[in-house]
Image (tube, rainbow, N blue to C red):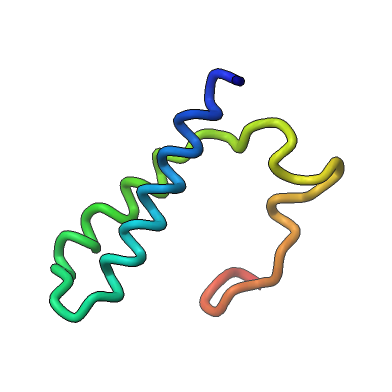
Length: 68
């Protein structure tokens, strides 16, 4: 396994579980607001083979509020 594959998979799993927690009726919004950006910022580069060859990670649609 590549050096960052385990870290990437673990962080994606934690983000997914945080998203599930955020959808519960008694979720702590302060905890979510503090943890989510930290988890997202800690994502390492995706492991080789995660995306098809030539895929541009920055080539997606523009998001509301983004630069045009």
